Amino acid sequence: MRATGATVIEVDWADWKPVGDLLRTSDRYDIVFAHASGARDLALYVNEAWGADLYVMCHGAFHDYVYTWSDKVTAFLAASPSLVDFLVRIGKVDPWRVEMVANGVPDHVLEMPLKTLEEKLSDGVGRIVMASRIAQDKSAQFPVAREVLLACQQAIPNVKWQLDVLGDGPLRPRMEREMGRFAASHGLDVNFAGWVPPEEVPIRMNSAVIGLVAGMGGIRTLAAGALCVGVGARDNVGLQVGQNLRAGLWSNFGDHGCPQFTATPIADDIRTYLRTGPYEEAQQIGRLAVKRARAASVVDGALLSALQAG
Image (cartoon, rainbow, N blue to C red; front, side):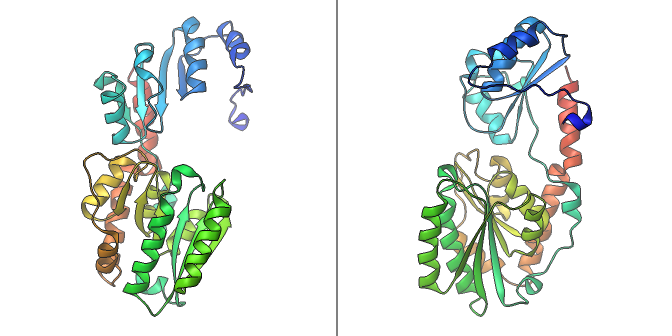
């Protein structure tokens, strides 16, 4: 950030008040942009003195007692339609003060050549890729990964099915043991790769048959040209086709919750779409859904529009 000319002030989040006091007496800025929850506390404190436009970005279904301080905020930006609904219903924020600014995907990922199902299986290996931290809020992905692996193996038994897990976290040792035992007993391969450079993830997804992800990973999986199974902290929204795709985009692929929705059975959808023709059609639809609404250039424009609306 310093390279762009920005001033960076380090904050001890265990005791942010000294920095807050310093900012309150410094030159006033026109816009304050904050995230929950510590940064939000600091922003509210500083803006008592500044009286600037204050915007709060919400990335998760965490109410943060928003109904106690929302009157001090110019507008809220929510990372999905689900969070817009959450802020209005649960947070009691005025509907007209909530705008969606979704996760985006770099435009160049949307230009990666799509690989057909036949091309992806040409080396005799079918790859399923997970990309997330391996923590409690993502633990629901592993039972679904087992379901996906078995469904793929049944649909196309003449290739070796492999799960590549990109990420790390406190549950990794346990999941590595459990998934290793499962893979050994079913003739599957599992590879825990740890964290990889962010730019490598879409490359891996471009060659994967299926990505099993949530949140931003869902957008990038569809953009890169893999079918996507959305399993997040709040919900399982299934293989991203048909109404499942609508629910996935609405809920940030299950991370933010999708009330009153039940996904179609994953195994049934895999049998339907793991065939030449249906696979490529689902690829195209998924990419177009992302390109029209979630390309970085589109999201950047939505953010600037929200901040300039006053």
